[in-house]
Amino acid sequence: MSLRVAEQEYWRDRLARLYEERKAQIRAEHPGVEGECLEKANEVIKGELGIENDLRAIEQMDEDLAALKKARDTAQKELYERVTGEDVPTSTWQIEKKLKDHIDGLVKAKARTLMREHPIGQELAHLSDEANSAMDAVMLASSAEPIQKLLANISQQVGVTLSDGERLAIGQGSTDG
Image (cartoon, rainbow, N blue to C red; front, side, top):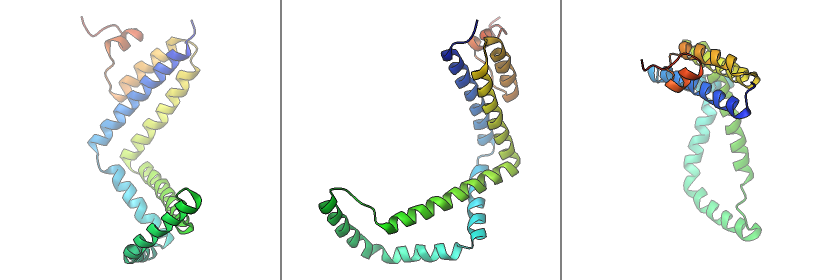
């Protein structure tokens, strides 16, 4: 008997939870690794781009202009609202946002690279890759048998105890004797 879409989705979601539970355990055992990699990536990217001093100078300028800008922004916002009926961002805001978004993207990419170089990051990345493969296998399964085998293997691999219902579903029986 082939699997219904609802069954595939159930098992896909359940397998994903198994992987997420294991990744949460790893993160709990090593709570600072991802933050450290992100912080290091931020430093590396800004250093590689040579923009640390520029960013500090911009921050200082922003602080110096804050009081004047508040009054200007209020007047400008009222004018925009009166003229257009909506709050329209200034081109400076758009440029700042695009620049920030671009730098954030570089930092996130570098953090992913650093995480893949770190032993804990490698384990998390490996689990993510395995989870993606498992999800594909579930969606391609034409019967319950391959999913049962997959669930049994994954539960052992990630060290998660299955519920009695899941044990029955994969043919291992109940833990109640």
